Length: 376
Image (cartoon, rainbow, N blue to C red; front, side, top):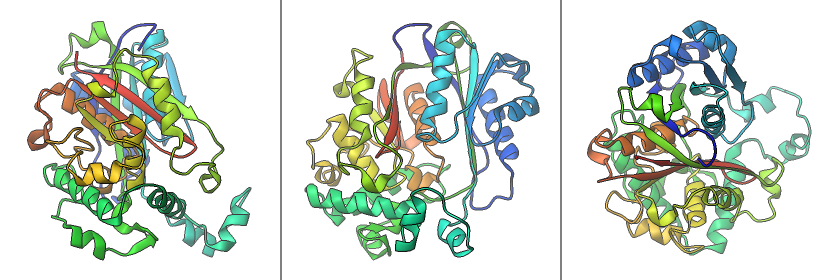
């Protein structure tokens, strides 16, 4: 990042993950943070900053022995894990803290439809949406997917090929929750959730915790892992949080986000060796590919079907299998996978050869964020 101290990622870790694990937010936070500390070769006393989305950062810090803290932040509603990660990196760069843990703890959520059926009062715009069946994120994602298919050259078979490619990566990732082989026919046989959005276009709900440790370049050089450096970041909020009323459902916040990111580095999309792009719904990844410029507008579907996102393709993408297979880690998995790819040799059979530059990104529509990482 331009300005301030150079920042590196030095530790990454997950908690146990699965459907309804029975573990609390504190359990997931403790497991993930301890895994990241062990990965970095750090102790609790080395941490002087913590940021999280999910849970209470002060409570987590006390539980884990991160005391006293010089800096902490609960980011609240934001474009998934990218927000605590960017805040952590900037806290280190600015000198507000020296070694910061960024966390995302997420528990499998009850259906919003069930909450509505139970008579829970709805505030603001929701009171006008829910009587017409607009109950959950899959429904706005269906709108985005439908509009994308209308304006692009993509077909449902392209979305099938996207899902099959992702599952192929997941089959080579022991941390993925969905690893069974998948065919195009399997995808097309899956039920619609919000037509044309199918079940296999949706991320896999689970309980999980993830932690990533950021520190200074000087400190990173003495730690256990090869440091991975934060080259540039971008955040965008260009509309209110009503996905259904976006003025353009195809070119959304990732376009603006990447303008911010590329303005802060001398690198470009041509330098990327791999990309880890949010797939809460598969259309999101296709929108990011086009925003990156790795294919022309409207051409992400054919790009995927031609093998462009495969391990030997033009831009290996979501090489851990993505959230549709790894589980809903809310983007923390993409930061962790990008870090492991750039360390070299830590992604097993899905390792991108000689990876030196990676991007990872979160969210779509009204808000999003991205982080560019380098291996040197």
